[in-house]
Length: 334
Image 1 (tube, one colour):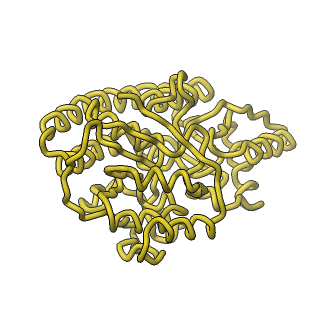
Image 2: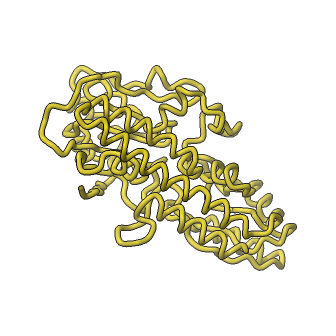
């Protein structure tokens, strides 16, 4: 079935919470009691099964999660991704139309690990009423050793797990398990589609390793607008630096800028990269600062960090997004 993307205008947090109270009577807005120091997320334990008409109405927060669910669900689901191309999930606030879409959903999937920080209250409310799951919850439950806990992120896990294809692959089974529980009549089809996607992801992972290996080790340095590529760096042996922190809520400081300029000049790095969901002004300032030091650094191109590309472009799917990012990095740094 088709994948629909809808994104509404942002409204104030007060307005969102007021709308939530109106839509979800009797539920007070609060942080999830499961959202502990390691970034655990609340998921609905509602074990009810689907009894309506197909396709199942699935609402996802990000396009990347929507792509994952669509791959597993196939024709049995109709997936809506709330956050469109270029949308920053760290800063996203729900609109009244988003709340209506959530309320009309049969089942909800989100990334988790606090990526959608400003939607936390709403997701907690929804989890009390209908199946609401984080795509990454299985990684936490299994204690996957590949989960990053950067010290600057205050003990929480880095939520950008999809940049390691081998790690995102494991979330296929978790999505399939949730869909099977909700719609047991099509369990075999969900498992089969997850297995087909796994084969594609494994081939993609090997391609990423091969292509990035074309860059000389000393030039395999990725500098971007914010620290979204930590899993990417760990998986593919790339040294990664971000001008901002894990979340784009963090503002870059002068010391961080100076350190990155020193790095780029001292190691004669050729390029830095902007991101589709982050304003380019910080990276542009970095390029200018390097020029003032006598080192020419180019804008290596746009990477997709937190959102997919526009429909009709190669980056409109997760696999296409990853291939675009790797090709852009290799072409600029090789």
